[in-house]
Length: 147
Image (cartoon, rainbow, N blue to C red; front, top):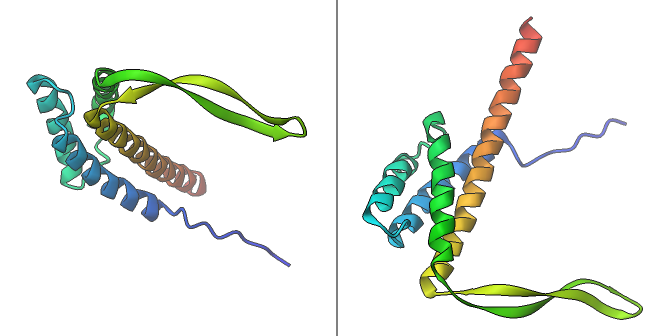
């Protein structure tokens, strides 16, 4: 008996996700004025313009995405209003609950919105990378099969 595993993670699904998340990312970043300064906002807006136009795979954007990650991190740090200690459970056994206490940042309302942008950005980059990796794999297989 032959068993095959069906995967719903097709190249088309990842590409569609990258396009959708790219548009969402552009809208979210624009709505919170990502970057804070007008110069950084212009840079972010210009880079994300292609995403709004449903073009998330331009190789020229690689360095820009890394720069935007830095802008997002700096912008997020500026929105920390304080910290609070929270308990994080690591496991539970016959002796009870185990874990650690961590200091966690408390963000302003804009900081919370920036966290949402960061999550969207990370998801977008993952879907984009998966799509590009699968395209590269298909090209490699074609070269292998035709040589």
